[in-house]
Each structure stands twice: as C-alpha cells, then as structure tokens.
Amino acid sequence: MFKKILFPTIFLILAYFILANENAKIIVAGIAIFLVGMYFMEEGFKLFSGSTLEKVLENFTNTLPKAITTGAIATSIVQSSSLTSVIMISFLSAGLIGLGEAIGVIFGANLGSTTTTWLVSYFGLKIDIAYYA
Image (cartoon, helix red, strand yellow):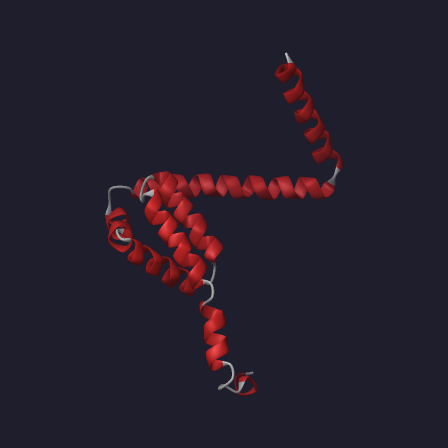
C-alpha cells in the first residue's frame, strides 16, 4: 500500500519540479541525450562483436599490464579519461571485454590523464612558449 502511494507521489513531485524549473529541464534533457547516445553506442558495438574489434580488444587487454598500458595510451591520445571510461563501459555492456580488462583499462586511463601534466612540467621550463605564439 505504501509503495503504491509513495512512488506516484515522488514521480509527480519530480515532474512538477522539472516543469517549473528551466534549469531542471536543461539538465534532464542533457541526461536523456547522454543516455540515448550510450544506448546507440552500445548497440553499435554489439554489431562488431565476433569480428576484428573483439580480437584486437582481446589482444590489447588480455593481461592486466597490457590493459593498463592500453588505457594510458588511449587516454594520452584522446586527452580524456572520461571518454575512455565511457567507451570501455560500452564495450563491457556489449560483451566485447570482461570486467577485469575494463577495470585495468580504466585504471590506465586515470594514469594516462596525467601525461599532459608530465609533458608540460618536463618541457615547459625548456621551451620558450612566446616563440610559438
């Protein structure tokens, strides 16, 4: 009885909040677009299962050091550990890689996100940036 009253009440309160607040509409629309994009990306990756992509992922992530290195290199290239993590979650939900491999790649992605900082700290003192401006 309590659940039959509580859930519709909470739903109505949330619906009123979303309709009454302009910022809430924008936030909910952004979350909806993100979730739809994740769904379509997952479905697209399912089309690749059993093909070359799955073999490449297996080759690059079959051991923990390889998975960490793959995550670090991928994040260094795309400069976004969030993007690497989202793609790994899509691979995982599509069944292209296992949980252990995905965790290794995400750990490597977190390490790879510091690559830019290390490069700037190493070369930043030796390069005259004004020369390139």
